[in-house]
Length: 466
Ligand code: AMP
Ligand code: ZN
Image (cartoon, rainbow, N blue to C red; front, side, top):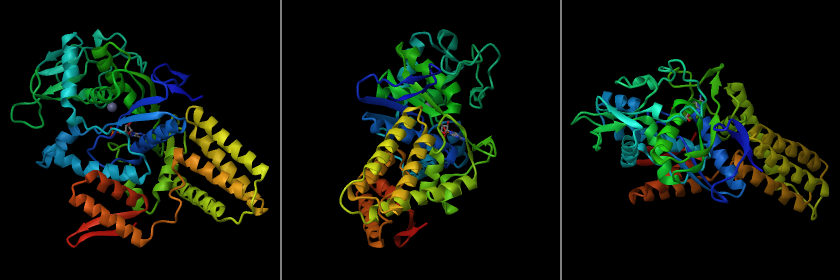
């Protein structure tokens, strides 16, 4: 039985879905104003392990993962360059999916963009104005926190003191408010100024929090199973999502909440604003493999902080190499017909331990330990030439099961041949000619996962190995 810590109840709980066998979940995605750093990817890699594990447990998963393609930083950067916000975000969105694919993450079922969901945001704001949970002041629409007594139930922050400035994003609302805690749902934009959208309550643009309420409820319904994101989003972002959604529908929003801890560097949280970050690309350029980066990011359970070091990354590199070699050795081992009971018992134990670890609040460290134990034991069996044909199949099946969740073994062939790469590159060109960008992005992702980068030159597309 899967059990994990639910931020909403502050307890480890058994997981029960609304609809049997189905999980509807939402994870806050990136703000596409820059390249995502590996701290962001720690949270997203956990999201990938989470969805894969739910599938492993037999659930059908609908996973919504948004892109925040409008916020103050995006507007400022675009206006500095005199380009539209779409022009500004396009290269970062492409880069994001490239990195996402290269890190072996499965694409979520729905990946909505905020700017494509403004009418849905306007609907929620209109409902909140109607039922008194929002008010207008100097052209802005604010959420009236005093009208939502449950405010604070997720983060359990005490609001007795003045909390303005508790979050970097809260005090960017410089307009008149009834209460310092109230936050902007809609900000006015003058006629002729961009980006701005027409709304019954005046031309403007949405606040950040309303985006996720609109996109989650549109695709998952008013009440859904699971909502996740990084620790810093718990307050105010997720608290505000709850206030907006529950304030508008009168129903419980998400039943379970999971918050991932930070990736730190020298014990300081990795962040753009502190400048102490590495992007996935930085590390690839330094020669580290995507598999090792993924391994490192998921090696520490999500509710524990992970301190990033290059020694740790180097260690992850050797570990994934060892795992891959192990799989090749097992695949190529000469095995007489038959099965060895000792091996069958080791495989069963490893699978049981793996599932028990993941069922225990997604303890990825213990899950990895069960894989390493199996590798060590089977190596001993192989040294004594005790591995028989059925054992080999059982070990390879177990590896495939582990990897369906963790994705740390990589593809089982030793990388594609040049001819195969040429075919894929040509197929991508054809997809682009037919404006099938979904397929062309997918191929770019497949190639990136094998360490192949594509360059557009005036003579056409060139590829090279990183
Ligand atoms: P942003 O693009 O700033 O909206 O952040 C995207 C996601 O990355 C959010 O879920 C953040 O909570 C998460 N995040 C940001 N910094 C870190 C970090 N250092 N470690 C782990 N997750 C992070
Ligand atoms: Zn969000």
